Image (tube, rainbow, N blue to C red):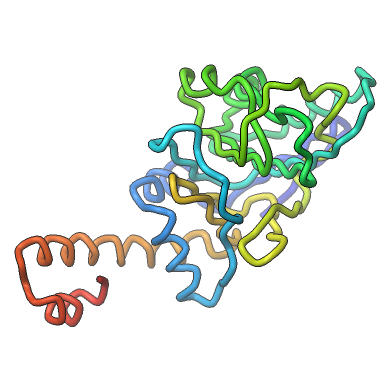
Length: 237
């Protein structure tokens, strides 16, 4: 893992795996299975708190976290937009933008223009621990977006991103959940799971193994086989 910084500042996270290959392998999976794999490996409470879901039930996110730290503020200083220049410059192909909001409910903290700019720099989805606006545009452009609620109110003068590619906290199932740049984000219609960066491949391999076993178990159950025999043979039920 490496963070590269310069005067923008540009902070690009470099993974030690092929992001396209890993993303293609994660996408067929589902959040419950990824969560189960983490639990099995001793990582508990790695899910964001209930209530964060995609704009449409078919949307999924899978990729290393690009973290954004936001705050509620009445500031209307245009210079703050310079932060966004470094933020977009720091994005690398395959990242999932994750924004904390410190519990702010005053506005829509992510919208279609932000998504358009992020997608142009390689971002493949967004997880907002708060709200979005421009929802129909986000849906029509097919940009996977997860949020807790929707709000049409403009963010400028109410909320802003003040830093990025730093550790952040979001609402977790058991309190605050820490997300570091590069932690693997997986989300579907059941919610969002956070895989620690160093566990990205190990969790994937275990989840893939179980996914294959479940397919066989599902087929055997559909054929009316004894559930006890199915469980003994495939280990997943």
